[in-house]
Image (cartoon, rainbow, N blue to C red; front, side):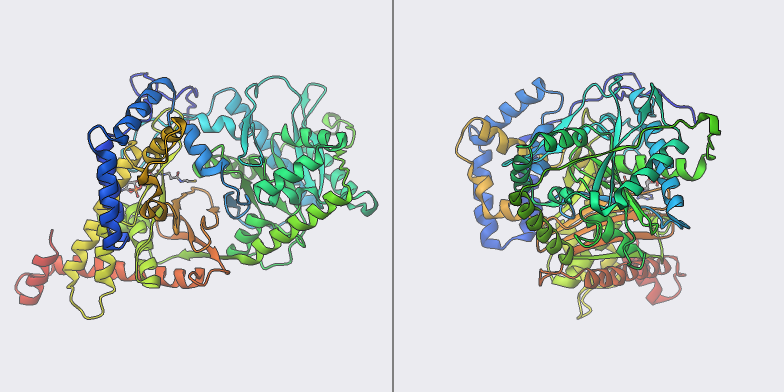
Length: 633
Ligand code: COA
């Protein structure tokens, strides 16, 4: 495939990508009411409607804020970027593992011994270096949108942050720092974690990058050094798994000592972290591999063999359990997938460049990062370990491969596969709870400059009408009525998707208005204090499509204590769902949700099949003719 030079993505006429639009105020307020009406009690909705109308009235607060927001749009490259980043990630105080950091789970590797695992790691590191060189040379091919509104170029800016970002914990808010001079000749290094110890692997020696064999031999030295129990230092990495304010406080304690400051500086400036994990002793099925990638198995396993602030952490388990853990703030899952797929193809596809003995240099062993931990810090390590343990015990994960059908069956129904799956998720939730709840589906807005995502609120009124018809035990609804409702639900979902990817969704806009009010030091407008608004931002169902073309899958945890995370990967003939929730919540169960999802997907298939069978039945059967009329739309 010819590689187009990567640049600021441009449209076909060579124009720079457009700026994220600010939707008209009335449009957003109307859409907001439409999104929440069927999710709140009637009385509450009446109250909300009055508040929204007052906010949007001519000369009202909404107009003032909208005007300022339009000014901000003119002045900035992307008016929502900072607001969104802070709201979605940096202000969130929850621990990164499970709550925020998504992971890619690689296929289980069959390593014969640790040398095999280190060869794999060395290859992966070489792949990272090649990929980074492509990014730095701006030679990654510009991506074009697929699916809905296919063909528009996508902003490539997120790629520049893959290996250059670091998220510093803060007492109130975190800071995401991106090294701007990434392509400079500054010395480059990777941090390798092994047995909770951290080592600096310089990837350049005498102005030349290390080859695969040299990297492998350096990793071998690291493993040997880590094995020596006498030299072992406290498991400082566990602090990064903690809640952000706790970690910020611990970091303040750490940096009082110069030794710790030096070690932190090396971690904070590395390209990525490579975690060489101990065997976990768990069956390497999909669910266990997902769990281990999300939290490392806690203190007793590899929970401290991590540094969560770094945007890319590659995990290579000696037992063949491998994947990537990433801090979500610099980029989206789609970028993570592209990078992971490149690496997997690099590892499996490129013939191993076995270095000749003359090209293997004698290199000094990698240095171990040193830590000075006083009793206070030792206490913090224990407290962080306890909190991680609670998170580990709390995560209820179920990776479910639905193998009855995939995207192709759905396309044959002339339906959008993504919308279909979203409606099926609504059906599953309804089956479990008898109601729908505020749902988040990420929609890419990379068609715009520095675009990240907005939200498709998938719990539409049409979805509610459909799921009610499917759960109707009294047989009130004929198949053709159910089918009509299914099509309405899918159309509503598809229309929302199109609105979202063209910058016309409501979440970013409402956030922008709220933040402008704050900047103007106005009293918080009533619309944002309203119970409905608060509930509508509690995403009990947090969903995302993360498709892959190579065998691997993405997953993440729920975003609220009583919620589900549902990441899905649609393939032509099957769909992988990664459903997560918390054991501590009595309202959720991943297994129960998965069971309902499976049932729902089968019921929708049966409905589609019976509807198309009815549509093709000869008209001489009176029953067939009747059904045919009802279902034919
Ligand atoms: N009939 C037949 N085929 C249809 C169809 C219909 N009515 N509607 C869509 N299709 C086809 C599309 O042409 C597309 O075909 P392709 O596989 O050949 O490309 C395919 O079905 C998929 O389209 P669809 O299911 O509608 O979804 P999409 O690919 O447009 O995806 C989103 C929708 C919202 C997931 C996508 O726009 C997006 O934003 N993705 C990024 C999500 C993200 O950021 N995830 C990571 C978060 S960390």
